[in-house]
Image (tube, rainbow, N blue to C red):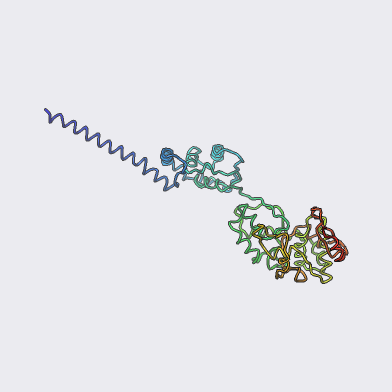
Length: 380
């Protein structure tokens, strides 16, 4: 009797252990294998998620992965502009993406964003998206920030290095060297024919406000600046340079000096008259900005335009130092704006050979005809 009773017990125990192993295997797949498969295909989970959250979200994505990997439409419209508004919630963005047909399933997309931590990185701006992108591509595209188009303002009087820095900070350049290399060694561009083929582009990068595509190549950015500069050089400005005895390039060089010397635009024609009078008289220009350009970046003051200059600075041996060398420097020292170009083409008619800053911190200058008068204008 005892042996017959043990047989059902042993069979039941075997079945129990078998089911236990089966459940353990299933649990192992759920807790280890499935999350690992998701991590391998979709990337690791966000580190701020708890252990249960990681496993739960991974399992949801495992069951719905086709909603992420397949595009919403194989023949969707490319280049669809989608705007993420400032302060808009991730949920609102996701719902609108589904409404316009860029993603297939809002809930699965939201799960992926939370799983990957990308829900916290959606940036306001304008994006070029398409239903032909899969949801994972869309998710990462929304992390890039900024806008599909970027607007930047280039100020008159900036040198090429300052322009390059602003372009990089605006997200248009990965690094500044490609831009600067092209400025210093320009390729054969059609627009340069009307600009008499300068050997470098310093001075020809027209200041102003520009809107560029975020993915615009460096050459396209430079060409747009050059084309605007060429348009700015009207026949009246070109003729004005000739009437002052200057070539086109010489006129731009002098305009760059006027741009850096002047503060108040109404004085630009007066400042231009001083330098033109000096050139005609065979005098040195004695211009501080030309020395600043020669010195380059001042690490201590963190500026390209060191001020004030020391006596040693004024003795720096450089062809740009107009305290040592007569005539114009070899190239422009910055990129002048329209006012500076016009002031050189149409300067004031004055007897002045000297000017210095007024003592009232107004940015204006006091002009003099003789050196003794110039000395008497010094601040006391």
